Image (tube, rainbow, N blue to C red):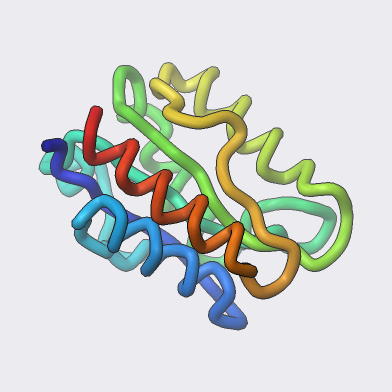
Length: 138
């Protein structure tokens, strides 16, 4: 059983709900994005990152993006899964984020990840639980 970190940022609570479901499925540890760094990342076998789409379908720029950018040099070979919510657009932010992780050498566990339009419905909640279980099993 892999030790799984669930790292997220949420403005409205939608991505937080998803993070809790991923953590439940993985029996994982929620790590606030402000506390995640390369040393902390090394304590885990796998990581699920969650961030909603912001602005023009991009990651949240105040807290999440700086944290994630700092980790990019440490993602090679790391088992990674992505999730988040969006309220407009097509979900392109998740596709772009997944491609970015792959460029960093991350071993993606599900491509592009799990997304929910606005609040996660029953299908998104089940997908988040399954995503967590998949990470824990790898």
